[in-house]
Image (cartoon, rainbow, N blue to C red):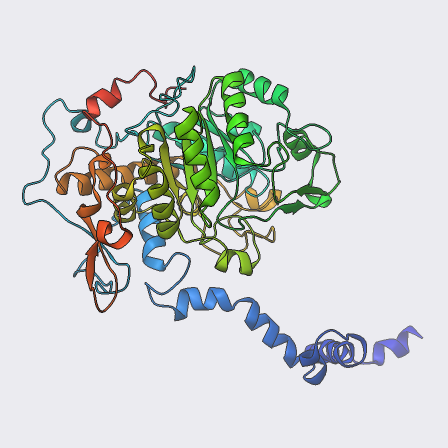
Length: 518
């Protein structure tokens, strides 16, 4: 028998390929029922789906021009990468932007700019740029906080970001003297590497929740007592990616580590409601803020994406009447961010940052309340010229999320929502996370912040000011439309920013509440 088998010739290599394709065709035509294309065009139909799957990458690298992509184009990403690596981030032969395009920003330089004198803090450290206001000072909180950097890491939670990414960011903000917002996933061990922390929680109360999903003041008190790196607390009312919408954390993603950090059960789906249980109206919100501030001694603020203004006006009126309220307000842009969201929310619900912030700021400006509040901007503001516009409109600090991710290696693969991030940043895959060199990436985040602050200061000095808080609405112009080609921010948005109390950068440096000292 063996002799007979030996006489049978082995099939050629191409026969195996033909057999494989034949079996695929049988599967496509007679077994699978989901895909019409594969049924009607067996074997070849697979090519269509493969090309579709790599379409974003093909367009990103071979089709789209340098200024065309969204949310961040190639030039913007390139500037962040080069800044983070301390490489040449200049461009030659003039701007390749359309300077007449809608919303293009122009910062007006002074004939003779500000000259940094000898002995000035910026002569010693060209990257030193703290916030001009102190969180919690007006409301006499026991532990006021002046952020030592005007650019900081925005709310991104452990769970949506990997452990390695969170650790790299926290070590990076420690080096840069910035703060790190935890996001609503709770305070993880990866947040505890020396950076200043803003503890953020939303409707799920992760990290400070009772077994039945309500807010626990006792857990909040203990969390702050056990972690002196927490400098402020932020209550999320809504976020730009999905304002007014809760979320679901599938049980399959809840590991024992994640369950302990968030205060939930292993393997059980967790719902984040669309609204808070701890308060149901503006009066209760203010009482909630004051209770947390009293128990912890920390500044307490709120974060929201802006839409209707009626409840914000109610909040401002109540602050005027009682002298109480949030120490800071973070305004998120409706452009969407790192949070996964339905396109209907990311594209259409809440206002883009410039419209939302200008509307909200006017509410507090009209009531002369701006001096009580540290305003924080969040929404694609991680570039010096955009920051100049934001400060001219009334911002005191900015938070960056996606820009921070890019500084540690994000390539805008837009796979944050499916756990397959190829750079290991927005995934829980242990294998993919191993690609993150934490010491190197923390250096790059710190260098991005340093480069950002240095260039922002140079723009500030060119405009004739010592600190960005001195920018006014008339210092920046934007292209509007064909009838009014170019207008100042004051003309465009209908208000003039309130003057920010500022004496000198040296006074900011000498402030006993200055952060970045952990």
